[in-house]
Length: 487
Image (cartoon, rainbow, N blue to C red; front, side):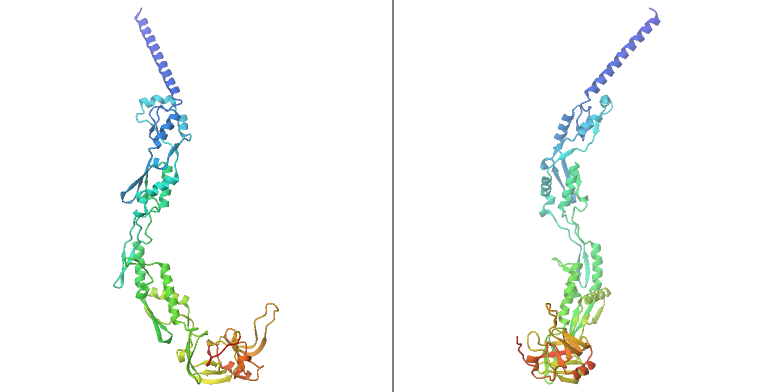
């Protein structure tokens, strides 16, 4: 055999061996690939669980076993931690087809790569489905030390300390009080997503926060400093006075147990309103007892009526706020919606009308002098018709008016209709007017034959009176003697 023949034979042998070897390798790879068509390739990890060489069922079983090791670590303030385990909340893995889907995506004929090149393993991550008892989760969570009521320290607002006429601010305190429902919602979400840690301190609104910060209270203190410089001295009727100063305004603040103060706008305004209400009880004279000089009788008193001082509380509150912002000392009368016309003669001044219903006589004073007087007839002395005593004022003057009683709702008719030439009301539907149907006035006519409450006057006198008095003029109505109402 020649050398050439020997060489060719060797080549044939080598090629044959290589072909056989290659075919064997191919057949082995194909065999192994077929073998991993229903199993995971070696070194395959699902959520850090080694499922290599396992079927879907076995892989899910192993994942389910591993699920029992689940733990959520919760981090709180001050570097404290709490944990919740799967066992505490009856957590279990629920197969949902995701593991099987991973296997179907697997290229089983690349198994050899895992042996030769993939030393770290073929790692897969899926969102596994789990079930757990949410009620137990809440109970377990709330039983943790960090969420127990006795371990909760509420936050404290920044506060003001008042000493020597000025405020200093104490910083707020954060505390560790939790909004439990907010924490539960965050924990429930973390468990549902299989998170292993949750920083509760970073969860929005997990911790209750102080209502007021140092900066806010500093701003309030500056405003209050100006307010407390304000002093309002009120000049009240009957030579009385009232002072609103820093001492009283401090009571409008909330005083805390430690002696510090907090500003609450709602409470401040409520207490300001209460102060003004109390001031009004001192300033108002409407309906109260008025003193006066009864003609021929001397000093008397009468209660009731509509004449006098009446504070406008809404306007007064607005004025106080304006003056607090100015921060100055002022001296003034309160804001009134009605005033007495004078400080002289017990508030009646020199111009007024006086009527003694017991004497059935009327006097008109101008500049302190009686300029007109006349007998009259007042209301019949029954409960529904007598003329009420009190201090009133003339609130209008009208000519040629028809006075009517209350219309009967059934018949639509008035009980009486009386045309008058001069009408001067002082107490709702009660007033002075001429009575041309009467021929006499004074005496005891009023007791059983009186009017429906008005003060009847002779026609000529009523006309003169009409031209003498003015709207707003005080009217004193009184009984100088005791009386009895009939029916």
